Length: 140
Image 1 (cartoon, rainbow, N blue to C red):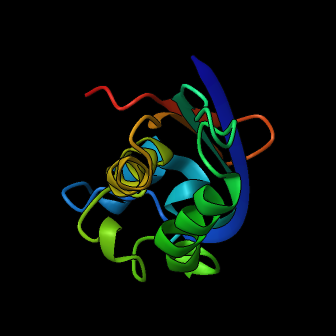
Image 2: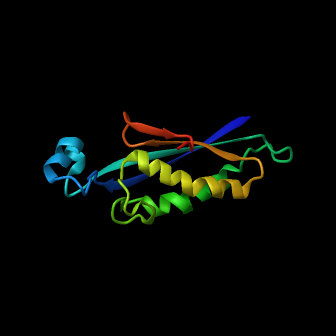
């Protein structure tokens, strides 16, 4: 089994806020991330695909094809957007990195499987800051 990864970068704003809580409780739990005027990050998304290399190409997946999928299906929808307001697949969901990465998985996994008989999405790493990131393997 070989693992190949592609890194993409995007900028987005969001607000962590639970509608069923008071403004005070939201500030207590989420701190500055509950800012009514949003806050933003320079995100990095690392997509790792696993599989056996194709005997004809030597590729697990063509990285140009993988890059195109990531850009079309995710980056173009989230770059310079407000995750709470502008991103269709985040509507009605808490805009935490944990929820966000799970929603990205739902988009990418079937697209990757559709372009390769052997490649599968293995993991996603979503860096919110240089110090904070989440990793997801498709398990719920």
